[in-house]
Length: 202
Image 1 (spheres, one colour):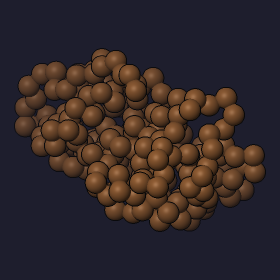
Image 2: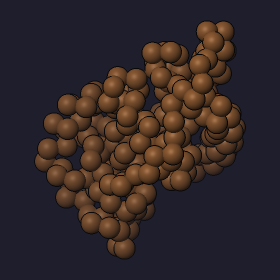
Image 3: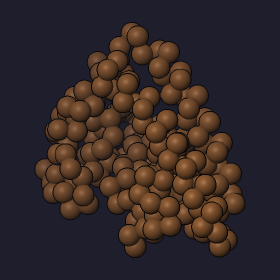
Image 4: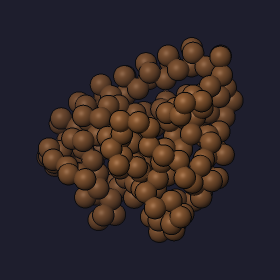
């Protein structure tokens, strides 16, 4: 994969008071992002006929979070985990992961750099890489992404590179669940021999 790195980390020195206030804002973003998704996945079901209002609310929350995070990124860059804690650091992942392909392409290189030096979550970074590959019509690496792409219109795990070894890769990077258990959690079908949809890249 080829990435062009436009993002930068910690554009300026940030005071402790400012970091504390940013931490509160970022943690609130995580709560909003995850709470609506827990309701959808665990209680309602993504394919439920009752999911509509919750999906609309989820999109509203995503839009609000993206607007707030964009201001933080413009002013401070991607802040290191050691400065704001794990939960607040996760806000950068969740909000960008639930945005659009252009924002992921812009910030993924910085995310990966920070993950490689222990300043961001490696599992989250792997999930973002999987999502970008899926959006590019390519097979994912860690099996973290599901989508509706089959002819039967059922939610399914997106095709995986070298699926026989996917759980070894997941374990090495730090995933807690196997790809099979993750599919169960998502209420998604999993076929080890799943093919890419037509017109996708190999």
